[in-house]
Length: 280
Image (cartoon, rainbow, N blue to C red; front, side, top):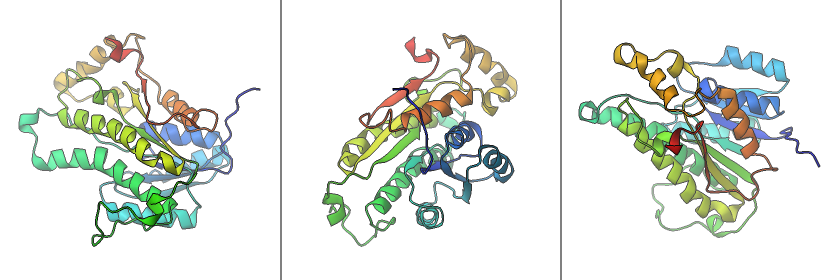
């Protein structure tokens, strides 16, 4: 029997889904027939998303939602679920980077990287799982954090998927750029997915991650001036297949990994998509 991937009737929530890898993921799900919800922080993607929606004849909904603002995240989870419908798949994709030597990095810069790349995906996932279980998205401050609710004790089959976009920066120390905060945040995110997959398996939720290598996005096309202008040359030389990934290749893999054809038993796995970069 041939494998076909049809997301008609499914709702997918993608953070940072209007640009870069996020846009490629949005495009891949739209092409597969999904209804898509995307969030953005700074650049409103309405124009490009409208064209994408018209092209594939699927609804794409947009919400402004800075990931580090937990109150807003919880609000958007509840709001989008009411306005669009119950979400089936969550893709924490949004992330930021900073190339700076650690001795020159301020506390606020470190906080920004960690809150955006690590804390935000965790709180997003927590909010959705609580919502799926019929709990409030917000964790009440007057509740004892170690005491599970009655809903959390139940074994149910929600049939939900979570897939986080991590990075090979969480596996190997990248060079020549200095980016310790980014590396640590992505290593933490990969481990968070593995940990949560064990915690939430009893709810019928699979949680996986992908770790892309260098992808042909704005970072590659517009490297920093000065010393940084030559970095893409080294990055390509260090990639055995001798090219960068196209963002569409990442998007298509995400669609496959979240499908019922591929993700009913796989959980806690990090898929490296790097053209062989981490083999040396």
